[in-house]
Amino acid sequence: MREKTGALLALLAVLLLLAGGCTGQDAVPPVTPSPEATPTETATVTTIPTTPTATPAPFPGALHLKEVYRYGREHVACEVTIYRAFFRDEYDWWSRDWGRYWNTTPSEGNRFLFVFIRYLNNGTTQAILPSSDKFVVHADGLTYRYYTERDPSIPILGINEKGWENPLDYRGGWIYPGPSNTVEGFLIYEVPRDLPPERIYVDGVFSGQARAVWKLG
Image 1 (cartoon, rainbow, N blue to C red):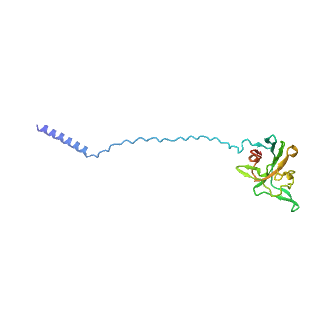
Image 2 (image 1 turned 90 degrees about the horizontal axis):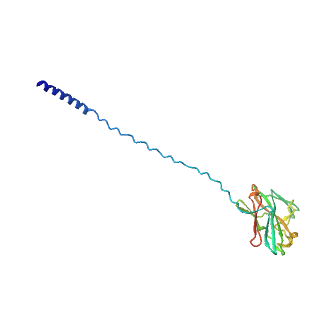
Image 3 (image 1 turned 120 degrees about the vertical axis):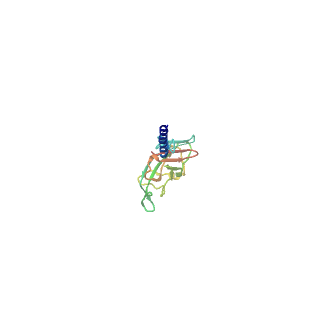
């Protein structure tokens, strides 16, 4: 009996030792699973190619150089054309005051544009001839008016026509019927030196509602 009691006591002691050893160890913290990484969305930018837009012509349907514009009917039937145009860096005209040719030069960066006009009355009665201020030049959104510092009746060296500023002399602003009464003359404009003919338009306003525009290039 004592032997059984001793064995039970020894077994109980072993169990107590085992229980004490387990409770004396540090507790291991639970492992928290790492959150899964959220994928970042990448925005896709689509580039749409732009189509160049053509700049509209300032005067659609403008006439070409030497093209005739006709207006009026029956008694008054006129034809107008810009038949020639060129540039000059300077020009010479006869000065009555000095008794010699006088040289005229433009402002720096400019040159002179000479525009030649022909006017014909095919009607049966006289018609009003437009004055020089009825013709203006348009280019790149700007407007230029005729330029002169001389008496318009004085010729320019190398040019046979008279200035349009005073083309009729004694006829006083009228053009009479018939080809023999055709009037030709020129106007001078000071324009930028780098302005090409392709961007120049001559705008003419005539009797009544008649109007025409010529493109020089």
